[in-house]
Image 1 (cartoon, rainbow, N blue to C red):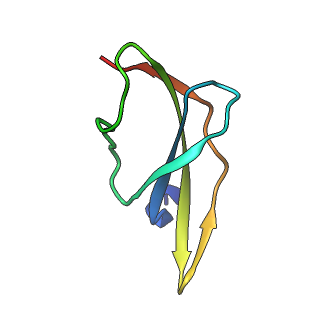
Image 2 (image 1 turned 90 degrees about the vertical axis):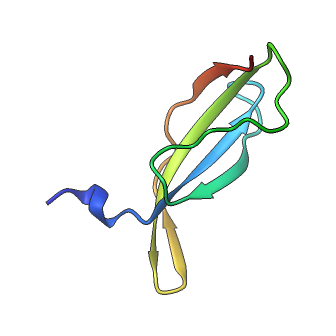
Image 3 (image 1 turned 120 degrees about the vertical axis):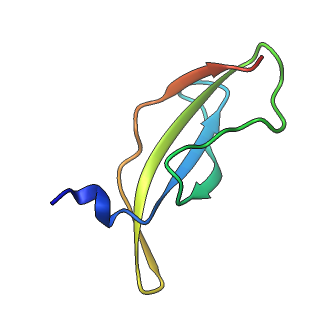
Length: 73
């Protein structure tokens, strides 16, 4: 049985520098996330994702992923 079945959702964080301060932008139960608001053209954005599970009213977070870079178009 896959552990991913136990995952409740994901947090997505963004920064403008790879080692910068990441701000949590979104919490979702979906597998895909599209960020199109408040982006500056030709700016590199760095994203990290971490899973969480919810047990009663408590959220337990997994480790952050490595950063992924996207350039706003």
